[in-house]
Image 1 (cartoon, rainbow, N blue to C red):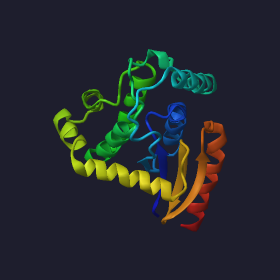
Image 2: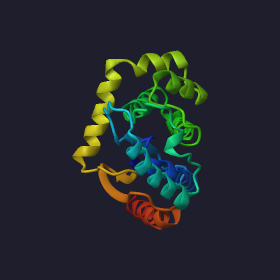
Image 3: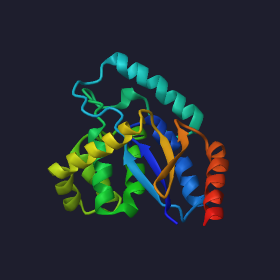
Image 4: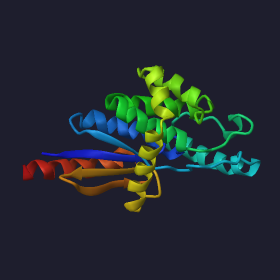
Length: 210
């Protein structure tokens, strides 16, 4: 039986960082259910540095994520001066990592998220992403070469288009797919307690059909 979870996310989406422990819990509870990551693209292509007002607005979101999920987050003021909140590079890193070694993608996403939210690293930079990819077990050279290739830009754009064509504009979004049919498990943050019963019913329905 062909079934899997599809997680549409952006590593620089704060609620996706808050949702990371939920994904971990789901993988632990359903270890034989494959997880496919899709880069949704929260703020791709941004070119202007963050204004002070934008940092203040972002700080409110981050405080809410920290309060509701317990995930460690610094404040946006900790980000480098002149920081440009362009999420295309981290999404491209996800797509490149998925192609190079799909088994390590989720680990890399977690490393990127921690570096950004808990350490205020500028994860929009290729050199930083290459360092983090190496920590996740990827070849730094292979990752760096693939990251700057035109095919990677085309591939991440295809992820953005796939999500947009489904009407997905908010993250995290978690889908369940069986034989090409999609079921929505969560659009926006939910706790594991909120998602697990729905996922359990979906899995049991598939087992009954099999």
